[in-house]
Length: 281
Image (cartoon, rainbow, N blue to C red; front, side, top):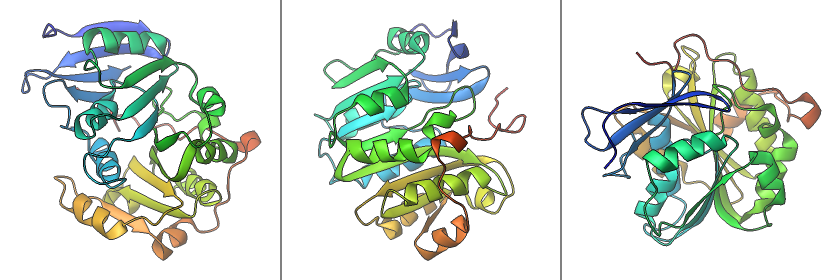
């Protein structure tokens, strides 16, 4: 069991801190430069504390029948919350976790060790570079949750990146991404347009307040070639402690509007969150 004292380490992308949750015996919060990155309960890996993580979990649950193992590629490691969730809910899954911050990965695996024989391999590498070198048709699910500090790097927002993601996914594979934006949603709309140019089906999960432009917040993108059961997803997200809405079909196309796909030459990072948007304490 880890000692219940904060652990601080300077990494390639900032100052990382692991802080124990006084309300849950084996739970830890990971922050980087004060911004929450991950929450892990070592004793209960199916517990997803952050709202966006639960929404990714709902989407993951819908990829295949309960308990069916999956090949999952995670771009962005954090504290490996979702890899632990998949290992617990779908034993026998094979997972790769890619994160450019080697020191952060070392901190997490040292103090929050992954379960033995969980089928999770961790790699210190650039997400786009790893994706471009990965075999075609090798993943059932690709989950992108990459933030350099508090922004998604530009090279993970372009049409070229989306095409690489589609290449690595199997024909019925599913792409999931944690995005963040606020009104007038220039970044979010461009991401939807970019992935709509590559995938046949899209859905977006976000809190109504975020979609109405009232505040900056997370939005989960789902992209695939197979139909998305938006109704089932909507029922689960609406029943969450922090209800969210699922946009799909004509409503989502209306939201995208005249936004265009983003080329590598025009790609920009996601917007800087306003002060205090994701901070703690």
